[in-house]
Amino acid sequence: MTRKRVSLAVAAAVAALLAVGLASLAGSSPAPPQRPRLTIAQMRARLAGSPPALAALHAQASQLLSGGLPAARARLAALRGTPTVVNKWASWCQPCRAEFAAFAGAALALGREVAFLGLDSGDTSRGHALAFLRSFPVSYPSYYDPSGQAGESITQSAFTPVTVFYDRRGREYIHQGPYAGQPDLERDVRRYALAG
Image (cartoon, rainbow, N blue to C red):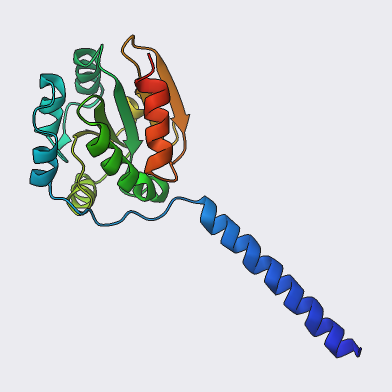
C-alpha cells in the first residue's frame, strides 16, 4: 500500500470514529422541545376533576406569577402533603428548553395526583419567558424569579435546570441537570414524589 493510501485509510478511520462519537453524544443529550399537541384549554379539560389544590395550579396553566421567593414558599407550604415537583428553568437555558416537553407530558399524565410548579429563575427578561411559555405551554404556573434567589433557595443550587421532588411527608430529593425524556422524569416522580 502506498503512503498516500495509508494516509487516506487512517483519515477515513478517524472520521468514522469521530462520527460515531458525535452520534453517541447527540443521543445522550435531551431532544429539543417539540411544539405541544394540546392547547392550554385542552390540558385543563384533561385534568378536570383534580383535587382543589391541583385544580388551582391547572387554572394558572403557563402563567408567569410574580412574588418571587415569598410567593413560591407560600405556594409550597399550601401544597404540603401533596406530592410536588418543582422545576427550575430559564428561557435562555438550552437544557431547560430541551426538557420542557418532558415536563409538559408528565404534568398531564400525573397532574391529577402530583402538583407541578415552575421557577423561571435568573431570566432577566419577563418577555422572553412569556414568549417561551406561549410557544411551549404547560398545565401549571411558574414563578418569575429574575434575581435567582427563589431558585437557589428552593433547589439549593445556582445551576439550571434543577428539579426538586417532595413526597407527602415533605421529604425532598433534588435532581441536578436536565431530563432526557418523559419516561425518565415520570420514573423519578414515582420514585421520589409518589413513593412516600
